Length: 555
Ligand SMILES: Nc1nc2c(c(=O)[nH]1)N[C@H]1C(S)=C(S)[C@@H](COP(=O)(O)O)O[C@H]1N2
Ligand SMILES: [Mo]
Image (cartoon, rainbow, N blue to C red; front, side, top):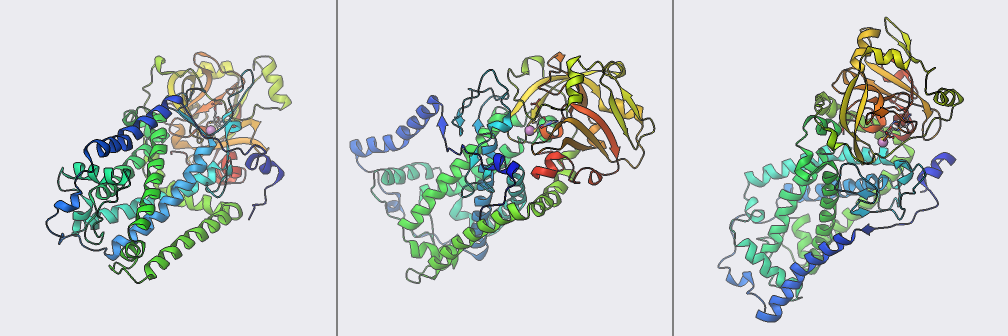
């Protein structure tokens, strides 16, 4: 089922260099080593010196009478959760591959990453864009896989999230309105020493007495299930939200929960690793501690040791997941617009009603400016732009038109005479990197005031001199409303210097509650229209048209 790529797509999505590479900083290996020594190592020491601790099950007086069994809602939400988790993780891997580096610093300085999934060092003395840095990931692992498929991967990731969340909320409500919480929530601090005792058993390969999961879990099992529900899920959500430009710009403190925005991205990744580790151990333990009985628990809700139908149905569910994976692959490559439209309907609507309403606040200081700022996009190759660039854009005139009372053409000097703001803000690229820079330029609100758009205008289109990834003019659109928000600028200055060619000279856009792809560089003209659907292919921008990015870029 290889998708039918055009030649241009093929070079992007299916490059000749498809090496898989996982590289961790030396310090990370030390941390992993210390973690192993502090758990398995100490367990062995304890075992060899003092012998096995008492199995907590031996101290147990009676079998619990509450929280027994596996009611239908619990079984259902378990499998629904598994389904969404797999889809979210697979699409998350595709997103990760688009900027295959993880950092703890906001500027994503090359070389400072603690983990990287690319064998390439960033070449010096040559422009290396974030898009060139994207890596291939097999479509067996990633959804949709291949290279630079972040648009479709985000569709899958985000469409699933509201349902994943809803399933979790229903589960928690039912957990606490029934007896079932008793089984999952530890009721005494004893759970910690007991869990350790169980761990020492496992780690030294002395299998402890397993309670029948129908009635209760062992202490370690209870603690890990509890952590998956009450720690991993909330941390995944919070770290995910902390990456949203709309949220980061409004609530400066929010990403600080994780140190900073890249800390949030790193934690988001580590949560995924924790989920995967849990999944592997969980499945192994289910198999090792009475597969048939355990499968009957979670499929039928019965405690039968002999009837294998629970196991068969469980396997059938895995087959269903694989078939769904194939369907998802087919949809991704044969019906991508369907996916894009579904994402806009579900998530676009949600963002429009919530975080997109937030107004950015300007709070970064000069000392926050990051030493590095990834470049992206193709420098214009048109003769027109080259001629303008060759004499410092003295002959440049920004054309502003469309449904306005006062259309006009403005030279850089004329624009500068209209006003200038200087803002220090964080840039969030859809690929995952960020950077903080100062931007100086004309507030869009001032320009809008002067040209006076017609009341029917909802959308502002920014056309570039440059081309998109697959050719054709780069452009993007913004709602008039977002253009009026604090920080929205037509910038001619970056870090107190005139904008350089690489970063978008003569003019580039800043709309701070949106992702980077909305911030058109090398702006040639601006048009006021009633709707984005009348421009280009009608999806709201060059990346929206060709790469299935979202119309709203608040997350
Ligand atoms: N004309 C044009 N503008 C563009 C792009 C592009 O490819 N062409 N890429 C966008 C993307 S994806 C990002 S992240 C930012 C990158 O800006 P930077 O090069 O200053 O980091 O520019 C945006 N503006
Ligand atoms: Mo980007």
